[in-house]
Length: 255
Image (cartoon, rainbow, N blue to C red; front, side, top):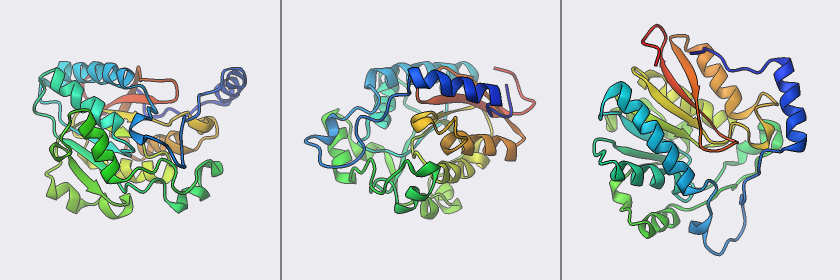
């Protein structure tokens, strides 16, 4: 288990050289008209389902069947949350509650001023109604998921924690792209981590933000430095641009 995941100068240089020849794939779609937004797969569903199966089994070996709630930040067309939902149903895991946090307007205008200018207002925009239609096509009733709609600065509050009785989390899927948004998310969940959880960062390497020391790479390392009572262990993630970690209390059992 480690308390920081910052790259050394040597690691940064070697990664930069490697990616000149083997670049991290870009997102297949970001903005603009598309014939069928539900058909867009930013991550293949089978990859996600395989990962979620492994993550659930890992938490079950530690916590039993009551692994805790699933929180997803950055929903887009619902492909990730639907993959977790269907995986839980397949495994007969009925104790998990599902929460989706998003403004459903794409990235905010403020995102253009951070992370080396790689983001644009409206990237990954998918309305709530469109997302619900995507879930319906997969046989998922959107009413079975708790939705928290709005910008994180307005919704990630203690009132939200109390309203939904958030006190046991299991898997947190962070797909909100920017440094500032992921930092708000991590500050929100920090008090909720009282037992082992799995944190997934979907865009850790996208646009080489990790090499630049920006984005989710920056927010997670700051999070660990500011919460020294927590330590993390990297686990196998679901694709090359993402990173996933098992996070637990410092001094607890080493899983």
